[in-house]
Image (cartoon, rainbow over all chains, first blue to last red; front, top):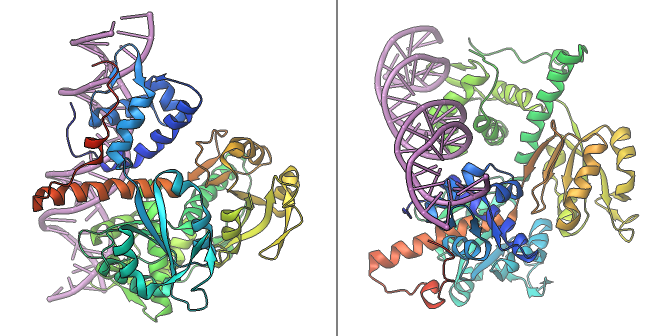
Length: 235
Length: 235
DNA sequence: TCCTGTGAATTCGTTCACAGCC
DNA sequence: GGCTGTGAACGAATTCACAGGA
């Protein structure tokens, strides 16, 4: 029963399954059960079966799924049967690393242009490409049929550059800046914030330490017991 | 009503709020309503109020929240009132970029060590630190009281290095490799996969293109109509 | 009047459990 | 016997809507 409208949570997992399946195919596995794939992808098997049921009935009862066929179907669903051209804007530390990251091209994302706002960087060769100026973004987008922009500029200019990307016709942005972007309707933004991830880890790390000291009976002083809290404003 | 056990979804949003609040404090704002903060953080205001209600009743009815006080409370909740020492393992492109990323130190994450498996890299100076060998990870973790590891090694050695990190006493891992890691109970892993993010964008991009061609009546050929699908194995 | 805090209603996502097919 | 596909049960997260305090 291949119903349209795949849940977001499922979409976000498809690339994970795809990665696991490609690994398996490379190791010569031709058939996989939801249990085996679940183990490889780090989820449980019910989730796998439910997720796949949104795509259609691609398995065989009593047997499992055909690895190559699944790879094909998931790739198609994710739009990976076509190549996408990508522009990276902001060729600092991170932009450099992204430009040199092989994983993109491997999965059908062609880095078509590198742009920066800084005249000093323009003309530099990075990852085999000449860095252009953001002012020319529209020309690049048109000529190279670019639909995805990767934003790795300083926070201060993030919104401005995003506006220019949208104006030039880009409809998907991968935002590495810490700014929340405002974009026109019809543009998809995904955010990757490295220090947010660390802060989430910090939360669980702290909680673990707190629990441990309760369990072990250690009177490990919380910093906030030392550092007196600012008095609350009202209540 | 400050109940314990904050929902995961809320924890993941706290750093976003924190960032918005710090920006506001820097711009001299002292009080903020859930509406205003919602706009700045890119969520809706009900969510803000509900999220904050898990931390306690820190607002004032009819007025809003005290920015500095909120910053203090969220920081405390996230465990950011203390500094955390971090090790980056794998000093390739990405490791380099991460080592030079200022945002970590700014938020209380001290990069205490850079390690690599490659003898060629050991001894190199990156971001002011000398790259050490992973074999010495245990010593570094003990001496520097490191609890968080950032994994930026090649996929092939990811699990092996993760094992060594866990063995040496690290309890949180930020995993930049495409591998699903198996870790002992009590270790928290968060995954950042750059090409997964692009693949998710690709899904929505493709869907948009498909919808558009229906709306506009364009007979834009899908690639999979050209490329005949592998025949299904069973059903 | 304004804006928080929160139960209640709703939506979304996960897991269970088993019928159906190999 | 083994494994998929899926309704039904459950649980988590979001949103509504309004009582209540400044």
